[in-house]
Image (cartoon, rainbow, N blue to C red):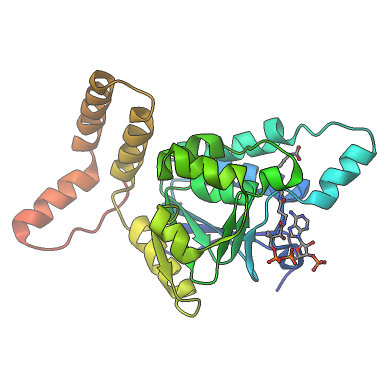
Length: 262
Ligand code: T3D
């Protein structure tokens, strides 16, 4: 295994995978890693050959959030960290605005901004041994990387505040019960299940999936009337795509459509 802190690869089905690779520190995020993730996500958004994105970790961590050693170095040098503005916020924006599905493959511990990044993704699949903790208040910090927006929407305000005000590790089964993750699979099955999920989404009608994602995100902060208008525009757009035409022809022919993502 290389010692690059973030491994970025693309497979034949158009799945681009970001593998956080600092397993000795549970893949906690250094500046170099945050820049690679932020810039890599922007590149994935612009690349039409990429049809789904996966974020995962190596070892027993998904991501333990900000690298605390680096945070201390900045503070001890008398500096103020501007990483929220420069890195974390753009990473969340890039995931939420990504015009294709983004999957968090939660292979292990997700803490602090690592959990926030997982929650910003569209689909979360977890290994049975993974642990989840908000962590922020444990080191005397408020919360960031979008978790104040995503967590209450996923699990409700009361449960979100409980996890944020009393940070402690919870297991994957509890995370599933709460609605923090979509699926939990055994550690042995995790890599295959993640690959199957990502390949399935990458083989989908990419423009329709992007439109559905945008419509759902738009509706989080809109009125019903706005949502109906937005949906209509997206239906008009996807109704003119090649993938829609292909799917209608396949339906009539009683075959399975192969989506080109156009
Ligand atoms: O301005 C700004 O910078 C603000 C940005 C903030 C964003 C944030 O993410 S704040 C939250 C930061 N993260 C944390 O506070 C989590 C800290 N980690 C933990 O609480 C625990 O490690 C876990 C509960 C996540 C897991 O516990 P456990 O017992 O499974 O593992 P461990 O033994 O604590 O950790 C294993 C190693 O990873 C250990 O190193 P060692 O002793 O084996 O050499 C540990 O120090 C290291 N590690 C874990 N998390 C971090 C870390 N090293 C640096 N930074 C970390 N965040």
